[in-house]
Image 1 (cartoon, rainbow, N blue to C red):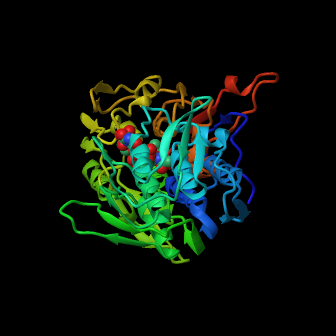
Image 2 (image 1 turned 90 degrees about the vertical axis):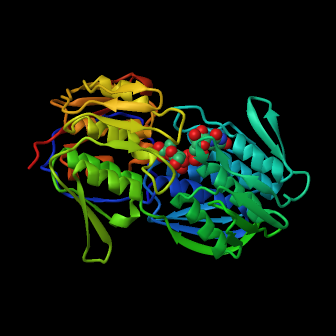
Image 3 (image 1 turned 180 degrees about the horizontal axis):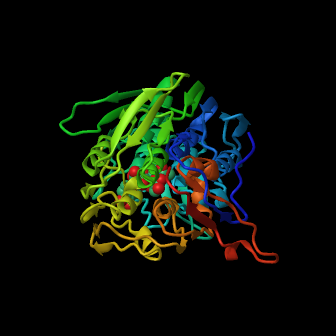
Length: 460
Ligand code: EPU
């Protein structure tokens, strides 16, 4: 497999085919990003991940892992991670590109005794606190502080000890802190109790890998959801495990939304209806969209979205299986085309409205009141320019471009779309849109790139 590069140039998009095609769903970006961290909890661990997504985060994860001394080998769409970390210094460039880097630092520190890492990078639509990660590390006996250069320094003077920790913030369970806690507890001496473990599939995938290498993770009835006991191995993990990265429900939902906006029966292959969270399925039903499942000739599930009229609705994000925050911006874009006014309420983050100002540049109005977006329906989207400020903002802009009356130029200076959406031009072609890279004007650097120019083909 060739390494998916972060585009050094922009993209250009021309009107494409009729749409109504089949989009092959990639492996989940967020599952993959967390699964990679398991490799830093190993010593003699062999982890094979099949179906890794062809996104730029693949490079960042590979660099994070190899930078610590673990071997990484790509074979077709598989990533093989093996060996053991030899340093606690986390690659600062790769870490700066990923919100999940703190999980890698935690696994590494529990393994080799120390980690020095930048504070998390990745999407910056709101603050990225790490207090829950630090809570876990301190409960396991680590010292956490600042190192020179504004870095986070974690140090264990002896093996991590068993701990009892709560993994919820005022917004509910934290996916990242849950993975941090699992990877530290798995290497600790004794039995740790984790309370409020995040119910997202990303966390379940990490639990599956830990169990496959012999770590006992017990679900406990304790009068509250998400309590698990982790029987630590008393050191780094060993063994061999092979896992297929689950399908990317967020990518799939994005293309279903674009297909619905294009008013064509778009299909996503490799994901079944019930792999979408119930909150998302229910929101689609309320809007008037029907999801149907059939099996492809090779036995894989295929989900098709049907429906032409779009009704207004109320959407509220929440932990799995509620409506996912990572589809919230795309859904807000879709609801600008509904009959009547909708509301979209964000409950996972204190704020996630980075798409609002950018959609406004395409003529789409959303009024923000606290954590709620009021979305008037029946709006007219016009062609124009907008900036991709983070990956799902970019996805919302693609959805808006699907109904815009002319080409849309997406300026994507940090290449956010490449972080989450692999094979973008080919997949957009399946939904009746065309995109290709633009070369930068001679002598101009990446910051001045025009980005992605998106247009839509007539629906057929
Ligand atoms: N939080 C804290 N303290 C912490 C950690 C989190 O207060 O120490 C808060 C956050 O500020 C937020 C809430 O807890 O309000 C939930 O955050 P969480 O930790 O679950 O998010 P995350 O692990 O940083 C992952 C995904 C996000 C996704 C969220 C929620 C990756 C790489 N990131 O982030 O994905 O929105 O879980 O499901 O998997 C995206 O793909 O667009 C994206 C941002």
